[in-house]
Length: 298
Image (cartoon, rainbow, N blue to C red; front, side, top):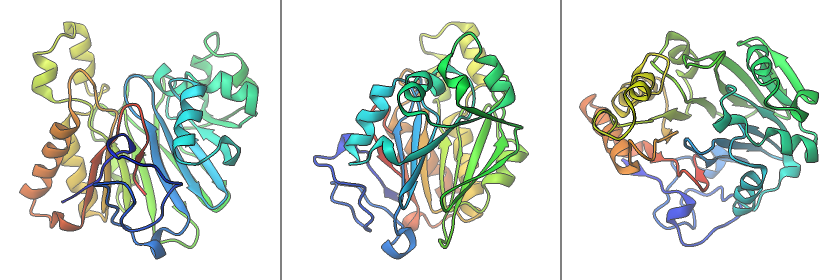
């Protein structure tokens, strides 16, 4: 098993390295330079405090979700040597605040188009203001092209008015990226959409025992454990096995609860699930996204 680290765990930074072994200590990427070319995918931060993913191909980039604050987005981009000027649009998974809190300020200053489902946009009326001038609304299934990236959405099971995941294909590259977080269970849409992705970001929100015996009130525990709550480490392991069987070779675990999970527990649980399923884990990159600083997938 190749375990990748986040920038927070490494001593020095660099401008989006596209090399097999990065300059970051203990950070290893399975994709070769010829495969990756000028593709970069990072979680800028990931967790209940805010979520944002940066995807770049050449001179075009997108953000998937924009939680926390505009300052946090720009700070995280600066750690990569990247800049908001490359971002051509924002793709929203759902309307919960940890995924949209920075939208108003970013739109006010940078006038970025926001791709969002009609249901999620409507739910944000009265909560967000500037963003509505920049929204492009969609059904749960839609396709958009940004530069040489083709982005497709698919519905995911969560207790929002609507929630989607995304897949991205990169013209001329044998790489397919998929992301599904905030998922209460592994749905048929998730499996069919993410199968065939080479690189994925999937949710490993909680360790079930830590959640059950932790400090959360009973109603919140029921919500998280429900079929429309969040995915456990155990269920994430099951999903990871399905995706590896379908061609995934790099997995980043995201949206970890800081109260009911730990990165080492999440990675170990998923790694053990892959080993039990008899996968050759020596060529699989597995890491947990940092809650506050960028973590590299590609």
